Length: 524
Image 1 (tube, rainbow, N blue to C red):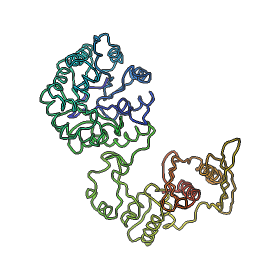
Image 2 (image 1 turned 135 degrees about the horizontal axis):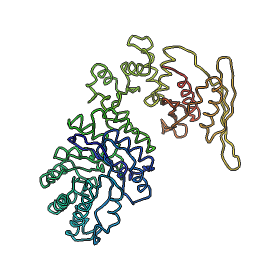
Image 3 (image 1 turned 90 degrees about the vertical axis):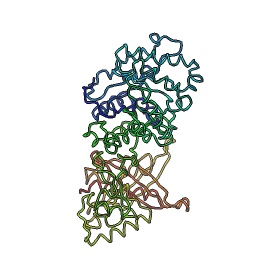
Image 4 (image 1 turned 60 degrees about the vertical axis):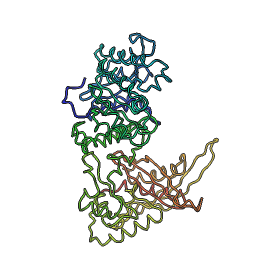
């Protein structure tokens, strides 16, 4: 069980492992859930909702393994519902599974909306109140800390305020430690959330929480509105994972609470690990990290326009609402046809080049970048190619290798298509010919190029492609259109992007591959 810490102004309840796992494309293994729970605990959230015991074999195994977790900050919660209608609570197998999960916290949901009582449960309003009270009381009698999630709370209140309040009070009078107001359909506006939270706070003596969804894009705004109205507990998921368009995003709510509303929630030192936590959960979920996430995305503090960059170099707060380091993020200066001298200077410094405003090549570099962007190149996600361009312009050094020629062909072998690439590479006075098969032309080229170079550059054995994207730059000319290829590569310690542009997709791919290998050999 977590150690007893001073209660923060706002408690953070994470439901990534339960509500978040209901999002499209999210599928956590038991091991994944254990790793995320450990990370969340280290970060300093107060509750971790592990899942619904008995709903599936995965959650059964998770709670069995979770008993061995040594949580220091968080308390683990099992999730379920009130007892079934017409069933004594002590005979309801689902409620018994909540007890058997052996978690210090149990969260149950119950019906707030008269519509759901009559049309979904198909029971009387009084029986629904009894289902809520019986279940809360039974769990309290078994020593559980009980969180009551008032499902469809806001829609139910708008339909019948008196009955909605009666459901909350039934949970409170039975001993619920928290009554959480759930915008289950995610369709309420902040002003509605404010008014109904105020009604809940005014009619309850227990603490009130908020659980919002993002169906109309205001999940975070609704959570903050509820907190301003008196809620002291917020539920959400890392990166906003969740059913439909997702849940309230904790990576936005937490810094808003700490840095904008100046309310204590997670430990202050944890804020600097927020981006790391966001990326960790994405990695476990096998999802690419969204660059446009507020606070933690790579674009959150990105600057592209020359005027903006010039101002940021003089006064960071002129175009940044906080110091990015407060949430573990960094400033990102983008290079494009909108770039000015300030962009080039800052980006060059970030890439390890000593470029100054009076460097003779600066004007040439800026003109070349703008020309290449006009031709279809894009350097925002291809810092490797940009670094090579800087090095070639500033250092005037010979290339480590040259591709003299290449040939790519495809054949049918036992009913299967096989691509073959032949590459002739020159390294100094040495020439190397190699042949490689691959699943496709780019895979074959990558294999042939790598095989030709590893004899001279063994470090390239560690380099591998992690992503490959193709974009048609000018669709108006159909199959003759210019193609842009973006490649992401890694050597296990760092990751970089490179770009190639040509009317021929194979030629564009080779450009990006060659840049990737060259950048791997380059040092700052």
